[in-house]
Image (cartoon, rainbow, N blue to C red; front, side):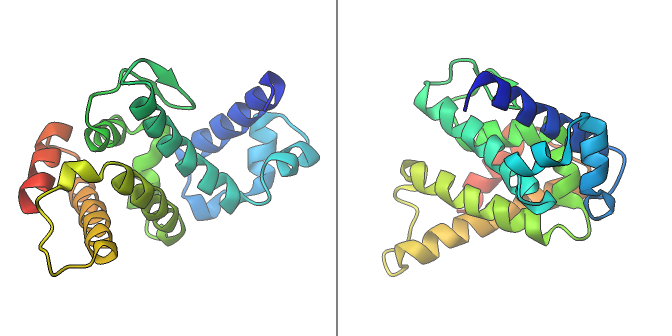
Length: 183
C-alpha cells in the first residue's frame, strides 16, 4: 500500500472512530463516514466493501500493531495505534484497551457487539497461538490443543468484558495477573 492509500485509510479510520465516540456502531452509516472523512463514495468502497469490513479492518489494525511489537522486540511501532510496547503482548493489548485507543472499549461493550467480538476473538486466537509459550506447562495433558486455545481465548475475552463492566478500574497488569492465575 502506498503512502496516499495509507493516508486515505487512516482518514477513514479516524472518521469512523470519531463517529464511534458519539454514536453506537449500528447507528453509523457509510454516508456519515464518507462525509466526516471528506472522501467520495468510490474511495470508501475502494478500501472497504462495507461498514462491517471497516470494523474488521480496525480490529486487524490493533492486532497487527501488537504482532509488530513482537516482531520488532518492543520498539516503538505504529499503525492507527502508537505506543511503546511492553514485553507481554497480552499486557500490551490490555494497555490499549485501558487507554480506550480508538474507542475500542465502546465496540467491546456495546449491546450488539457480536460482529466485533467475532473479529476480536479471531485475531486474539492468532495472538494466543503465537504466544503459546506463555501458557506452557498449564495445559492438562488430556485436553486437546484446539480446545485449550479456545478456552484461553474465551477466558481472556470474558475477563476483558468483566473488566470493562467494572469500569476498567484495575490496572492492565492486575488484569493480566488475574488472567494468568486462573489458567
